[in-house]
Image (cartoon, one colour):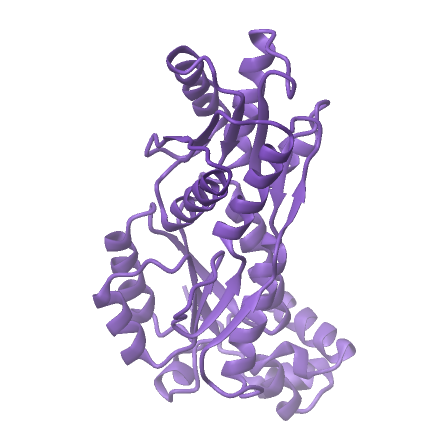
Length: 332
């Protein structure tokens, strides 16, 4: 099968534009007018034109590709993050290559090295837990790197997220204000974000002279897992009057099990989740949760990454805290 041999000059002639305009479009579609974009797109579609990026990559001009690593394709939290990344990347003419590290820093290291081998222009990572080897590779690569979902004292480069510890501290304080004293935290994979949330809960409890329990299944969160864990909790610790979950699907599982057992929520047991997923707000009894700006995190991080690539800002570390808000709903 023959490759498409159309040149930029051919596209320009058919679109009624200059070769310079078509070249500018190939580098960044946002740099040309909407009318020109439409004309070029139409010609490329009609002739099934496939751009050849290899000369640009070999010349050091870049691949116009961003790498993205998320912890899991099964966790719905990251779909909003990916949507935000994709929106901004496409707007500026960048493609994305997406991989998962399964919450394992060693796997993450391998994925980082693989993505770097494709000569990506920038990299977006979910979280801040990286092996020293991964950090060394990233430093050597010289490309901009954005870390999402967390705020730490020492960012690699760009960091966009919120304070997980403070968010959990605030939600736990609200539990206590409403008279709850026997609290259990349900985690999931024991990643740094889970650990920070449990730390925030513990600090808030200790401030009031209380202590809590920690259930850590080492599994991806789901409603089924939330139900199973609550069955254990209520059997082993029947005095429990509050459940704080690291994700809304876990919390919804707890709520469903409470309803099945005719346990009054929030009178007997209060429940809160994390992230403000649709599943919690769409329920008849609206789930209390920490609302996190996941779409905005993807958008802002990608925008900063591309701005650095296009030299609209100086290279160097930058932290953006997008914050969170508490939603007390009907379960707290």
